[in-house]
Picture 1 (cartoon, rainbow, N blue to C red):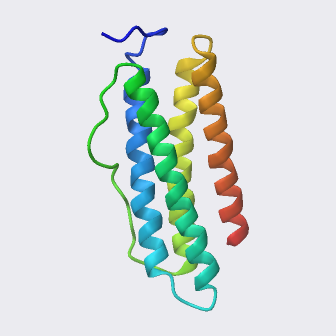
Picture 2 (cartoon, rainbow, N blue to C red):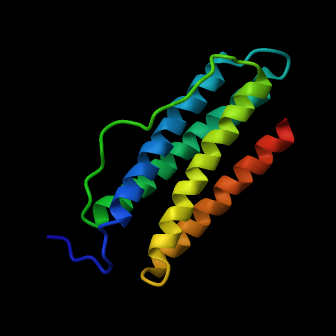
Picture 3 (cartoon, rainbow, N blue to C red):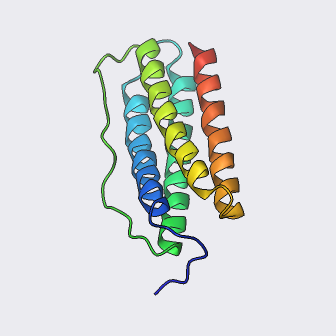
Length: 142
């Protein structure tokens, strides 16, 4: 049995949701990198590939924390909404929606961890900062 420092009853399900959302980001951004066309394709493909790589790192981080707290990660990914409209503007708007959902999950984790775990608080804050930066960058691309 894992000796946890905090009550993980509410935290572990959120960590699992974060992991699933980040894994969905890997698929989402890889898909976008494949379907982008037009004169700005190359820098946008590189940007989407970076987002996919970062999502995988984030999924692994959440999964490591989850299992370290005695949780069991779900095999799969979160649902991926897609309009099948592959214009750059729509891809960016869908991406912003994805990032905002991730922000909500990390903010939920922060609220659950506040006052109980400095490590989880700092982890959540760091991820919130990264997700906010993604939204800012994508807004600028629009």
